Amino acid sequence: MATIETDPAPNGGDADDDPAIWVNPNDPAQSIIIGTDKRGGLAVYDLSGKQIQYLSDGQMDNVDLRDGCKLGGQTVAIVTASNRKDNSIAVYKINPQTRTLEDVATRKIKLEGAVYGMCMYRSAKTGKIYYFGTSKSGDVEQWELFESDAKVDAKKVRNIKLGSTVEGCVADDELGHFYVAEEAVGIWKFGAEPEAGSDHTQVAKVGDGRLFADVEGLTIAYGKNGAGYLMASSQGNHSYVVYRREGNNEFVKNFRAGAGVGVDGCEETDGIDVTTANLGPAFPYGVFVVQDGFNDKGNQNFKLVPLQTIVKL
Picture 1 (tube, rainbow, N blue to C red):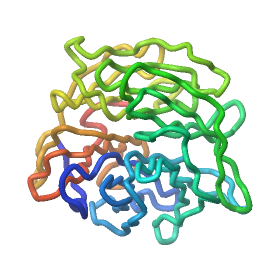
Picture 2 (picture 1 turned 30 degrees about the horizontal axis):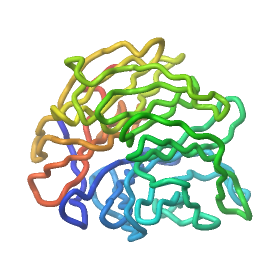
Picture 3 (picture 1 turned 120 degrees about the vertical axis):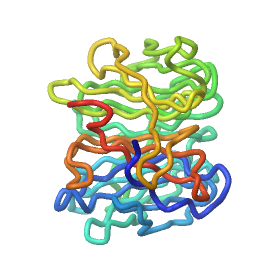
């Protein structure tokens, strides 16, 4: 059951899409959720669901972040998003005092194709940070992010080609995998390093009785010693699918996010995110955050589900 929901999106219709969770290292109960509004920009919410910032910066579709990044002599969390308005990479840092986003893109970084979704990757081998941009054409662009005059610039390092629309993706920083959801086909697994090439395997297939098109958001719940879970949004039947993170990503379970006390359930979910961190009294074992396509209290929003009610780590 969902226990908390965010304020509704500022814009109506199919607006909210993808969340990203930032764990506050100083006070985890003061962590935030960053949510995309593809009709207007980015919203930032606290763990009670209250909106604390809104940036009208474009048609933001997917969002992701990595903390522990060096920028201007400081260690910061870098947030990136796919801006469909101009096919660019939006780049921010999180101000830990205000828990808000500050633009740190050194320039307008435009992808070569029309961007749709995205995710980030930090290499355990080199420490470099990457941005994967996905598209409705099936093309995936991998860009290396790097510091330039205390801001963030990028250069393209790799192309991947799939046969049809891809949006949701996630990278496993520790194991070096890149997973991408081909919406009408299934989930594919590539190497995440730029030199990994085009070799890939299919993790799950639409029509296997567990996964229903469209396959949307992907996220990883990190466990110990390479264990944990790969989680996917099975939009076609309003459910979520859990696979093992390790090995060949064996199927674990399906579940739905039902209504809780004063919070409606979730349908037609796009993006998802998860953290296994202790976020304080409300989410001591982590939280699973999902976009709700049909919020019963108005515009779309995001729902928060205690992670321990789904899986144990």
